[in-house]
Image (cartoon, rainbow, N blue to C red; front, side):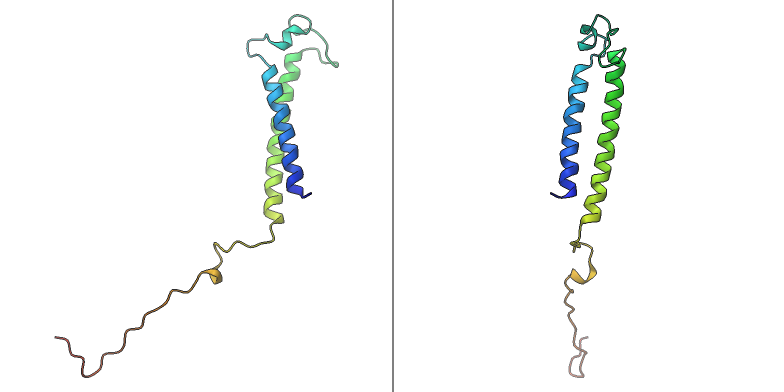
Length: 110
């Protein structure tokens, strides 16, 4: 399994978690955060306000996703051993040149 494949799997997991966290949130203060004890005052895993936890987890997951995407790009560029021939000067076929013969004494164009 290549390094890029590992990064790809991690990015997909973080993206799935990010979608779940965003879908749980409600911008008006209701949603699932208010159903855990009425108004966000309940403790879930030691967190006093569920909305604060969801907000922090959204930013954390987004930061992790950005970092994984940037690191995967580094591994794509660093791990590529095959050179692209797009910008290789020697890979471009030479343009055929047509030589015009030198005028001779019998060629007179007026």
